[in-house]
Length: 343
Picture 1 (cartoon, one colour):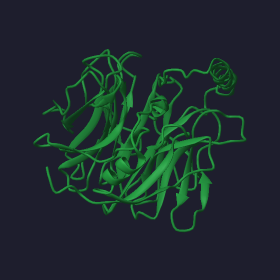
Picture 2 (tube, helix red, strand yellow):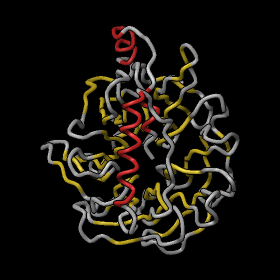
Picture 3 (cartoon, helix red, strand yellow):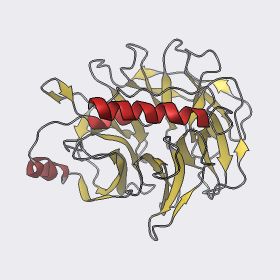
Picture 4 (cartoon, helix red, strand yellow):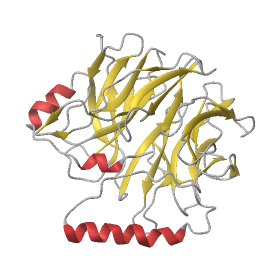
């Protein structure tokens, strides 16, 4: 789930200062996407040769995200979602032969939702303001499977309410996802078989949001975000796949901490946080954390917002969503990554 509204925040900082700081862990920083109104939440294919991500097209008349793949070597771009309604959270199967993503294209009212969104944007421009972004947890969202080119589309979930934010287990046999199937205000995590059968509830924290889950590289744990302590103030959690051992990794409800993703070493994560500010305005940057000790290290320092980071399969590259200078629309960025020696 791309919280695009976070990307509008800017703090004053000399370019040479933050660029120099980022060279500690990031080299060869470059923008990956540009031919979209906005783009983000990208994930690598298992072989690291391509990525899958969500983006808003410029000329289709649909203001919501669709799913695309990009070949990193050739630059070949392909839309793999139906093109109707909303989509989010794409992910490659570990064998590279399938993908999953959430979509509302089966909603009979999907196209009727376009105009209100465009009208809201027009009003923002007239008033010179931006809405506080809120993900709407569209009840028409379901998880779909397809081939990497978008063919062989198959619906995996059909429970009433929101089903989205899915990702595969390392062996490809299971999918962990967010669902409102226990009630519209109960956004819990579930694990199901990769074919959509056998769903079982993982978290039990009602009347809040639990989402953005990913299996650990060894398949034994799930990392996720939740606002169970204060509404909309996301914090990071980890839980065993059998539902035991849940614990909070962050506990600072003054700022949002979200978008965690595992490093292949099975011990560290990278995530976005706003636990520093200038003039009372938060700025979102990427942080590295040791899940066992809780020690952390700041990775990005750009004046814009850096969010939704992921590692390449070999951990040599980091990809994330950013507007870097705080003024342009969000796009995908990539860099060579050096793992912090400490902590």
